Length: 92
Picture 1 (cartoon, rainbow, N blue to C red):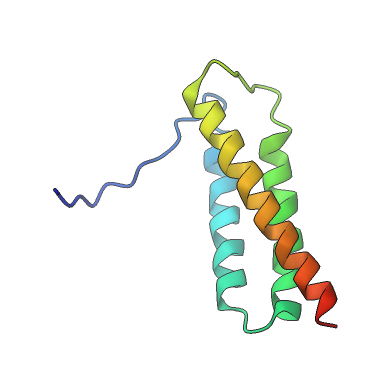
Picture 2 (picture 1 turned 60 degrees about the horizontal axis):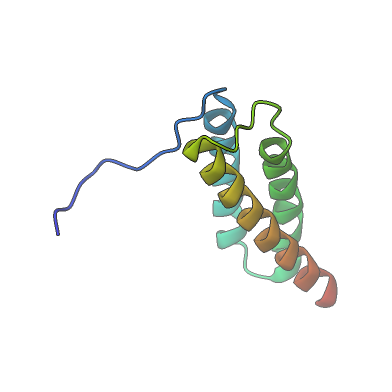
């Protein structure tokens, strides 16, 4: 298999994905670096807000693969962040 330094990306017709992706990546990294569920919770809550922006995109086109990928990744990220928040609440 050929290795490449290129990163696959979603070509968002409105540009919203690119604007939100930096924040999503920052929050994901913060969650991964936090040591306890309680420390992860505030970052997970912020992440939910960041992906909610993508899920509320008014330019969503169900026929566009890029839009469907963005929506799918955003839904998955929101569910994952929601689980982190639930675990954080249980660990208090």
